[in-house]
Amino acid sequence: MANLDNDYLKYPKRSYGMDHDRYDWTMLQNRKAILWPNGKKIALWVNVGLQFFPLNQKGIPFKVPGGMTKPYPDLRHYSLRDYGNRVGIYRFLKAFDTYNITPTFAMNTRLAERIPYLVSTIKERGNEIMCHGFNMDELHYGGQDISEETALVEKALDGLRRLTDQEIIGWMSPAKNESENTPDILAAHGIQYFCDWVNDDMPYDFKTKNGNLIAMPLPTELEDYFIINNNLHSAEDWADQVEDAFEFLLQESEVGGGRILGLNIHPWVLGQPHRIQYLERVLEKFGSHPGVWTTSASGIADAWKNQQ
Amino acid sequence: MKEDPGYYEYWSYENRPKITWPNGAKLAFWVAPNIEFYELNPPNNPFRKPWPQPSPALPGYTSRDWGNRVGHTRQMQLLDKYGIRGAVSLSAALCDHHPEIIELCKERNWEFFSHGIYNTRYTYGMTEAQEREMIKDSIETIYKHTGQKCAGYLAPALSHSENTLDLFAEVGTELFGDEAGFYSCDLFHDDQPTPIHLRSGKRFASIPYSLEMNDTIAYLVQKITPRRYGKELKDNFDRLYAEGAESGTIMCIPTHNYQVSNAHRIKAYEEALEYITGHSDVWVTTGKEIAQYFLDNYYDTALADIETKKKQYGKLG
Image 1 (cartoon, chains in turn purple, cyan):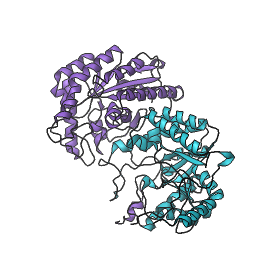
Image 2: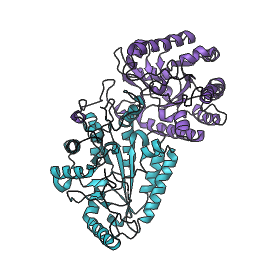
Image 3: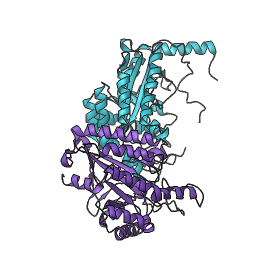
Image 4: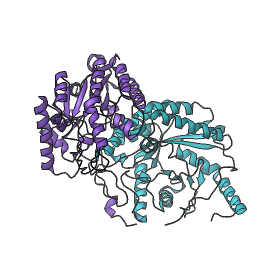
């Protein structure tokens, strides 16, 4: 084996707190309790990914999870993702209305450009839209040229603001991946909260060169995609895990203050005919639960911010 | 490179001298929470890439940071509830970064054992001197922050050299004599303790730590559901508990708070802990206590039995 340089045993960042300066080190249990409006215990954040996976995927610097995997043209994955935006999403919308759930939509700008009907439908409903990057193949990644990334963020945000007539203050990067500069660029372009750092169960202040962002907790490991497509569990197993999480958070909220149940879901996954009933099952339970506050991502971020 | 690490002899599970744990217990049960620090931008190691994406690799880093910010205290509450003291597999640098977590473990009289400095610094490619220095740093850091003389080792990210166990035992002796460096969690060949051959001849044991019951293996490699994991823990316990009537067995649950303490997973884990600790003939203990008990009471009879069988059946190979 080739030997390592002695620098491998040097640890320049081995000191109190984090090994970077983006946020302060704190433990959830040591923070003051957050109270949700009307004594609610759980803020339910249903976050729907509306995504465009281009057929001519570049995969730079990696293939986005959920993207094309076969040689071009990968019609099977392209069209199955498209299914969500044509069919699955309308099953979602019906379920949200039936069970009085307020969703938030994380939308790729390219999708908004391609499907004015869907944009119009969501605008009419009045739900919040956050930017999910330009499309699922335009990744933000370490080593990316800063001017190239800035142009990408501008293209994504300008386009989505124009097409939706919304302010667009929230962001989720494709694959929740970033460069070293992404948070600085986002803060300079009117973004107030983002959901790429899955390192907490509550919002926290995230420092950038252009003022703080609010980091919002949207757990990857409870996503429909992660549980069903990555772990290969059934949709019923997804619902069981979501309900177990809910019961646990409800219990923890008794001593720790308000908690957030963040469900990041995708119409091409749970919008399938054999899966939709399991989304309906959990929405029915939460929609009628007296401890649940169903609201948008920015509704949760505002409530948190007002108590800091 | 060797065909066989040479740490232990073949020794059949049947017909071994009987082990009885304290108070006649049939099974020694221990929980090993890994309390780790993964770096956002670790140096390159030519033999293993720390993260799949170019730095900053958010998916992996942020999930592990979640374990430190949120997860640990959730599992602590559970272990308190069921009277279990954790034996912490510790990234020693966490003492510097997050001393609050160390304090919470100290308040509970938990054991700390070495899991290297960071879980993003691998043993691969280290010279013997470098690995010795890394191990020494970890044992000294644990002593400085906790006052404990580190008894056990689990190599960082399970990255080993041919000398890992020898070096750990030797550094333990150099610093604290026989009080440190006397067991390893790095080998998965048995459900009972095993005497380990070292070049120093030190009395040293391998203590079962179980990759199979490890939450990260269950959730990230096998990708099983939380309820299935809870069932596997109970099934593992049932069999080892039954066999423990013949000769004492060990069950270990190695955990990672970024996995097991997720809101959607912790209930299944709690049900297993409640089930296991609800049995009468279970010694709820730590890795160090098991190793010490074995070395004091059964190490010599184990060695003699291994020697006898070797003479009777001939040597391996």
